[in-house]
Structure formats: C-alpha cells, structure tokens
Image (cartoon, rainbow, N blue to C red; front, side):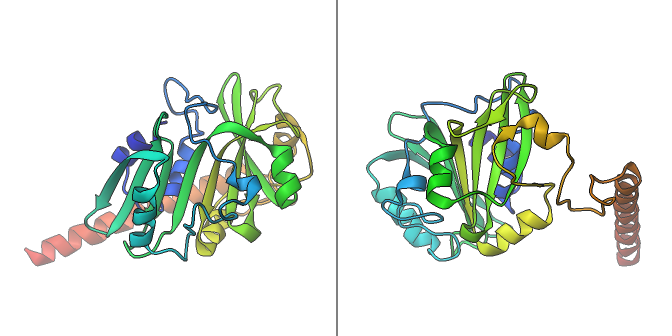
Length: 264
C-alpha cells in the first residue's frame, strides 16, 4: 500500500508501527509489489555509511530533533518530493519522500514534533538476508505475512539495534528464507517503541533459514495474549479477549451517554 494512502486513512499515532504491518498485509487490492526497483537505493544497513543502524544519514530515532531531521532531508540532493503531514490535535508529524527518479518509499515520524521517533524505508532489492546476518548477526525473532499467492514477507527483529528488517519470500506455500532472500524494507524505532512492538506482536524465535511453512506450522513462541503451553493462543483465549474488548466499548459508551445527559 502506498505510504501516502496509509497516511490519509489513519491518525499518525504510532504510525510507522502500523504502516510496517499495513504495507505487507494482504488487505490491499491489488496486492502491493514488495520488490520495486523504484524504491530507495540504499545499502547503509550493511555498509554502515554514513552511519550505522538505527541511524540513517545522520538521523536517529530517539536522538535527532525533528527540525534537524527536516534540514537533513531538505539538504539531501538525492531525494525529492518531501511531503509533510500534521496531526493538529496531537502534534504528530510525518514526512514522506522518494529518490529523484523513484516513487514514494520512505517516511520519518515524530510523535511530539520535537524529536524523531520512527523511520520506515522501502528499499530497492539490493541487499540480501545473508549480508544482513553477516553484518548484524542473526535476528532474535521473526513474523510472517502472506501478501499474495507469489509474495510473502518475513519481518526480522533486531531488538539490540532497534531495527526490523523485511525479507521477501516467494509466497507462503513454497517460499523460503535463505542467504539470497532480498531485503525490501527496514524500520528504525526508539527503544520504547521496540519494546511496544515486542509486547504486542505474535513472533517466532529465529531458528535459522527455513521455509515459510516450517515456521508457521510450529506455532508462535511469543504472543500478546495468554497462550497454551508451547503453542498459539487458544480459541477460548481469543474469544475472551474479544468479549473483554466489547465490554469495555459498551462501558465507555454508557459513561459517555451518562456524562452527556448530566451536562444537559
């Protein structure tokens, strides 16, 4: 899903965490092309130049001010079409941009307008998973998303460097992760946001290269809701959670109605 379409459909709060899931989800019609040579040409993830993850061209989530980040973007002669979107009620801001001869690919976000919080880059397929592991070691966790019959994605989590790397697989049925798997996106976040992602995601422990199915068939190792021993959430767990959410919504509606009546 194009970044600007996502931006137009939702508030900016925790935007990149949402986008990182949305742009690899199968909800788009037609499905997005995960590998696109018109995305950002950037190999800094493995070269460490001009700075190493989670820094990109001098911008680091949790450290760089928003004003400095905007200046860096505006002074960068290799990117263009910088678009700024503001959420007036919350003070959140997002900037999208692209390379000179490319398409919208990248987004930098601030929750308070003061400091960069998260950055997402959709990449031209120039980096392989083998190169990432050679540079940064093996990831700690992964999650999987089926996008279409011939496209799937693996999100590979590096909590120590507050980074998520996205690798391409040729579908859920036959796709596999290997040294030559192409990297098509990377997400850099603040430490607090990495904790949030890990607490609210269903993840597999990384056990090495393998097929989509070999991971999917074994059940999650980490989940955001209670699990049965050694497996995925039970239907009862999920039903209880949905019921609880529904009860909370009803209570909130009743409280709002009461407050309105009293005010009148």
